Image (cartoon, rainbow, N blue to C red):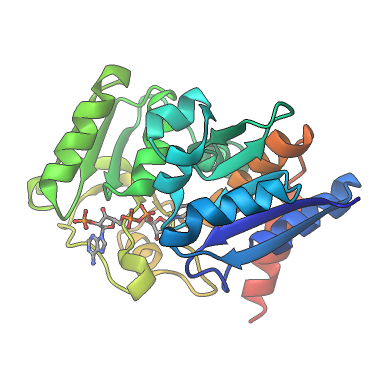
Length: 276
Ligand code: NDP
């Protein structure tokens, strides 16, 4: 019988995950199906229960379900515990459901392995204090940056998040206005502003010479933040397509015990969008 996997979210019709996992399955010779299913938060618990009861082996959970997935999982990986958000569920042989968060690992793999960047000793600015920021903070701090500043529209959320992760490194938080006069080597945009073509209000001079910008959002066209980075003279101004593929590769490994090669898929997606 074909092994069943799926991604739950709302909205979900735009999801690239079925294509990504279909590619990985073909590449590694695994017999599996992977579907995208629209699931509203109020139906999450029942739908996950039905999925696993029908023999499903694993789920990805995306916006707005990651906190619900955290609550659902009976066993959690340390990084999921730390993030308090889960994007990957796996049914274990004893029937218990394991929750993991592969977002941060995906981002760090994209930065280090695909873009050959270093995070150690860097001054990092993280824009946004929502679910994505929560998922990536610990993996970023594990790379021993010089410092990590969180800036958010609602400053209190950034301060609270910084306090929560302060045991892992030099992390602080505040609002966008506090950024004036500061300078960073890497600026990560984990706000959802790009999704509506907007930019956080960023003062000039934030990016150091040779600095890098990275938008977790992605699209067929450069996002508003990627364009901002280009205008600041960033050495690289990148979007989150590589992160998306790498977090999927980590979920695939958790489910199937084999790590797919993401490079051909990144090249294919890049080729497709430059051909548009
Ligand atoms: P959340 O809804 O949890 O958080 C949204 C964040 O964006 C909050 O900090 C919010 O600030 C801020 N924000 C929203 N609108 C604006 C605005 N107009 N100006 C400034 N700040 C704004 O979203 P997520 O954390 O889940 O997702 C954030 C982004 O990361 C999305 O673009 C998402 O697509 C992307 N992402 C990409 C992944 C990938 O694999 N590439 C994986 C996960 C996420 P406030 O607290 O004040 O409301």
